[in-house]
Length: 160
Image (tube, rainbow, N blue to C red):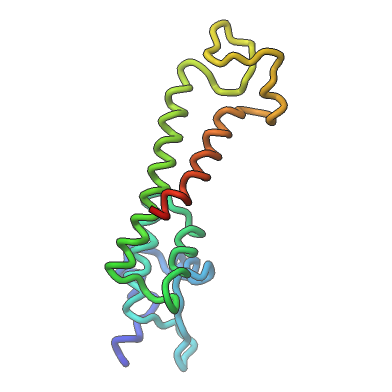
């Protein structure tokens, strides 16, 4: 049982995070601990893998809520295995590809149009007579539509 009683300081040092980060992850439901007889937090060693998954996902721009949902999808909320990581990363890859496609479209619009539908530019590649885009909302509606398309396309990509 001694191997299953890692202190918060030991886990923080081993993972390269602050103790407050571990408390935050625990508060968000990403990791769990229990209290010993002295009311000190204790962790099982497999928490290291969960934290590694969290940190890797964050580096990819995956939100903590998305990480939480992915971890909750595992049977019995277990620590991800190698196969689980393969599946999680594959799903996140589809989402990242959609974000990349959106950012590429955004990059391409930046030099010629901000996508708002206004007619104030002398040479606008978008033809918007009578400001018809105003009916679809305010702001950069073309870019907002592109962002929605990316989000809609992501679940379908996860099925394949």
